[in-house]
Length: 153
Image (cartoon, rainbow, N blue to C red; front, side, top):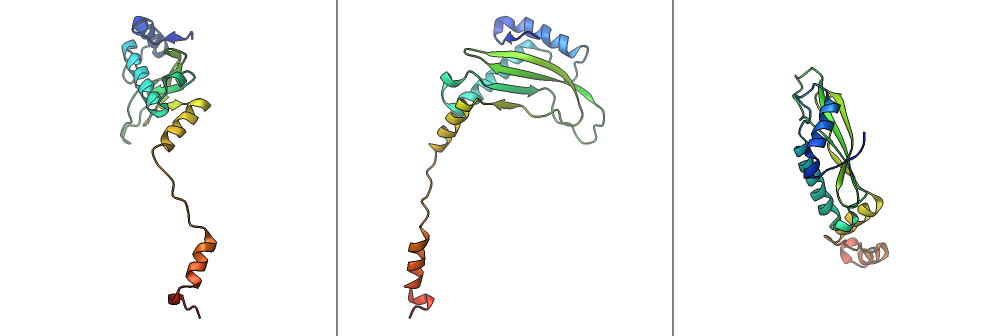
C-alpha cells in the first residue's frame, strides 16, 4: 500500500484504505479514518513523554491492533486490524494495514524507538534519580576487624 499521511484532510483516504484491507469485517476491526488520527496523537504523546524532545520525533515506528482481549470462553476466531505507523519529519504516516485472525488476544500496541530516541529516553529517565555509591570492601573489612563486638584481640 502507498503510505498515507495521518492528518484530518486525509480522513476519507484513511477510511477507504481501512475498508479495502478489512473487506466485509466490521465487528472487531478499525473502520474509521478519524480514529486513526487519535491513535497517531496518542503515539505522539507517548513519544514526547519518553524523549522530551520533538526534534527527535522522526524515525519512530508504532504498531496498533484493534479489538480488546476477550474472555477465555470465547473460542471463535475474529478479524482484527493491525496498523503500522511511521513518524517522519513532521507527521505520522500509515504505512501498512493488515486484517489478521485473532482469538482471545489480538496483541499489544507498541512504540519502536530509533537509537537516538532510545538514548534520549534513557537520559531523561536517569535525570530523575541518583545512584548510591557502594562502600568499598577493604574499608568495611577493616571496620569489622577493629570492632570489639566481633572478637578482636
